[in-house]
Every structure is written in C-alpha cells, then in structure tokens.
Image: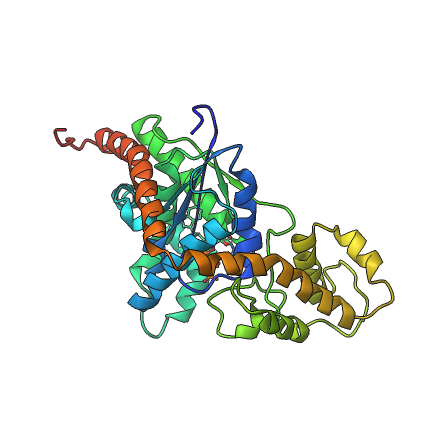
Length: 335
Ligand code: ATP
Ligand code: LTN
C-alpha cells in the first residue's frame, strides 16, 4: 500500500444478480485504477437489506460478488476487498452522520423517491431514507479522494460532500471531501427493453438486462430481442436510444469507438449488428464466468480474502470513527 497514493472507495450491493451495467459502469473501471490508487472495494451488504432479502440468497450473492470482483481482475493482494458488515465502523459513523442529516434532504434523493414508490402500499422502510447516509459513512471513514460510480450515483456523492463539509464546519476539519469519478463510455448502460431507463438488476423483466453470468444462448436471445427502432441505420444518436445503447455495449467490450462502429455497419441494418454485439459480450464475459465458477469451489479462500480485507479496512476506518467520536464530545473507551 503506497503511502502517497490517493484513496478510492466503491461498493456494490449483493441485492441481485449483477448485470453488465454493474460490470461496465463499475467493476471494469475499478480494475484499471488498482495500480495507481489505494483501493477499497466493498460488498455493501448493509445497503442490500434496505429492501427485503431472502437470507440464503443474500449469502450466496455475497460470495458470488467477491468471486466476481476477483474474476474480473481486481487483485486481492493489491486492493482491500471486504464485506461491509464485517467492519462495524460503517454503522457507528452512519449514526453520527444521521444526526447531522435532514429528513428534507434525504427525501429529495431521486433513488429514494423511485424506490419508495414501489413500497407505498406495504410501507416505506426507514433504511431506504437513510441509505445515502450509510453510503456517505462508507466513503468518509476511509478519507477517500475518489469514488468511482455510475452516473446514477452522482446525487449521493453530492450529499456525501455536503455531509462532510457540514461536519467539518461544525466540529473542525475531520473528513477529506471526496469526488465522484464517472467513467466515460460505460457510464450508463440502459435497459434493453426501455432504453431510456437504466439497466437495473432489480427490474421485473429479465429481458431488460443481461447478467454477467448469463450463458451465451441467453445473451444471444436477449440482444436479439432488444428494442431498437424502424429507422434501420446504426447511428449514435439520442433519437435512437436502443441502437445507441447497443453501440455503447459493443464499444465497452471491444474498445472500438462509436464512430468506427457506425462505419462498420453502414448500410447493413440491425441483424448482423445485433449478432456481433452478442458475440462481443460473450467474448468478454465467458472467461469471467469460468473464473467465478472456479473461485466459488473454494469458499475458504474467499472467506480468507474477506477476513484480511476487513482487518485492513477496520484499522483505517476505526481511526476516523475515533476522531468523529472525540469531536462530537463522546468519551473514548480506554485502549
Ligand atoms: P438496482 O438496479 O437494484 O437499484 P444497482 O445495480 O443500480 O441496483 P448497485 O448494486 O448499488 O445498484 O450498483 C453498483 C454500481 O453499479 C454503482 O456504481 C452503479 O452506478 C453501477 N451501475 C448500476 N447499474 C448501472 C448501469 N445500468 N449502467 C452503469 N452503471 C451502473
Ligand atoms: N449506493 C451505491 C452502492 C454503494 C456505494 C457506496 C458506492 C454503497 N456505498 C460507497 C460507492 C461508494 C449504488 O451504487 N447503488
């Protein structure tokens, strides 16, 4: 761990099977950052229970997520990979930050508004409202400089900065003010069925997303069924959101620019283009799938990585939490 390296923190919830949105919007970019930064990559299981989870599914997905991080190229020797609930400092910091947050600002969050609509009839859990405060705690206790996330998370990063600044000005300098880091290209992968909405692992329609673990024939079928338009030209424009999304996906897989993709499929319609998008995805995902399956055979190896990761993370996080406790006037326990 280099002393002078900037710190990166990011996380994914084990709340559903991961989609290519999670992969291109998050994980694939994390891999590129691991040499230059001191990276904390977390499995945010505390966030996942803000909506109801089946305990056995949560357990399975948590392990699968660790395996996916590693299979995608995140080196556990270079990075700190850990499970959020193994580091109690996240929850301690969240409570303190909760007490400096306003219900007004939390209820204005787009994700809260979207998700709470779904639970209007059954009751909106308080965890959904407080979710971004936990996210702020995640980031701030590591004094992170940068937070690589998809575009949908920018509002939460803004709130994190606000909470950090508020705490700093109330109690004196405590937190570094982090910045979001939105990658280009893979920033937002859209739903295959409603390409004006983001691809989401919690969608009810499986044809709207492609999972990292989808087998080749499923990928082919879903891409073939992806909604396009009747213009019939492969062109990168907002007027053709379905085609634009498929071009983005192809570009993420192959590194080809969207201009080159336009040229390659000039005058060809959508059939061949869609076939090639599916093929590019299969090429990208198959090696990862094989590695995930291999890693899942050795659960004790995965557990060991998480144990080491949590020890390293706790050491850093506890230092910030002690600082927070001191500043708000708590008496620290004797060491
Ligand atoms: P849900 O869709 O269930 O709300 P999610 O997949 O959006 O979940 P997370 O698991 O918290 O939520 O997302 C993890 C990371 O993946 C975040 O950085 C998020 O921005 C990114 N991400 C998720 N979906 C997409 C997408 N369609 N395009 C790009 N990035 C995405
Ligand atoms: N809310 C995030 C997941 C998340 C996160 C974080 C991302 C929880 N804590 C800290 C970056 C940093 C999401 O992507 N839905």
